Length: 134
Image (cartoon, rainbow, N blue to C red; front, side, top):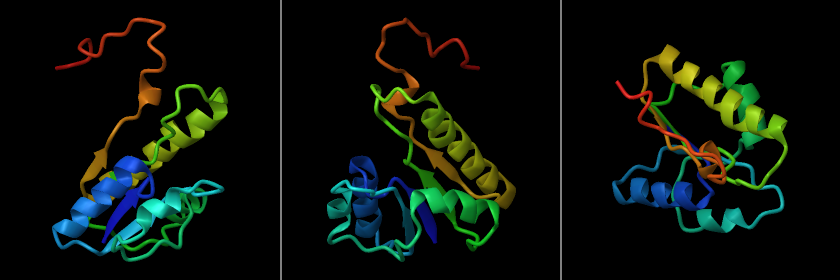
């Protein structure tokens, strides 16, 4: 099984489609649909299950209720650069990502993470991503 967070989003659903094209269907899609129409992105895609909401999955991982996946593909960060609730970003983009990474590390499985626009913000301030390269 592959865990795919953000699987109902634009990039996540395209990645899900590509996995399906490669014959992979044992995929646990995790996302937060609330009142959005993102569920439409899942129509016609093949995946194992979608019975875990993103908010519940955090607790499921911590309590170890999910069997060992082959890999975690984490595309579930909040990508909005205009959302102003700092606590939401910390919990959603940092804490959630950290828990998933540590889970993958502990299990010895691949962790694939795609950053969001939220990492860089609105470019009001200059930044240099080469500083930390080794």
